[in-house]
Image (cartoon, rainbow, N blue to C red):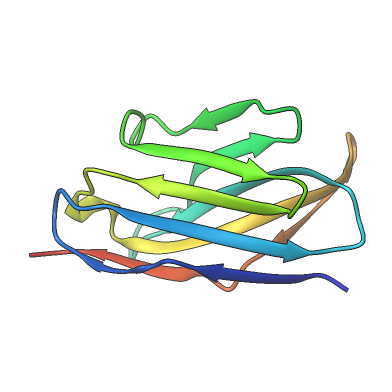
Length: 118
């Protein structure tokens, strides 16, 4: 059984910072952890991912402002968001990828709301 707990969302003024975290309990080996976001009327966007061997990928829209990190001993992924803009407003979902190449399975968090507004 897999359980995920997300935390850290909220309301912040433009230019502010938030840190999201997502902890996963799973009996399976985790290959990667990351974040997507979904804003009203927009397509889902992958924001950041960190693989087990430490490789990261950050969306161009947030590069230089957001940082992803992970603790694979705790299966926990973090998203540090700085210099937030109103267009960053969205529901942020973490995901945990288990399995192996050709047979991955992603588990999704319940989502946490991030609102950037003055």
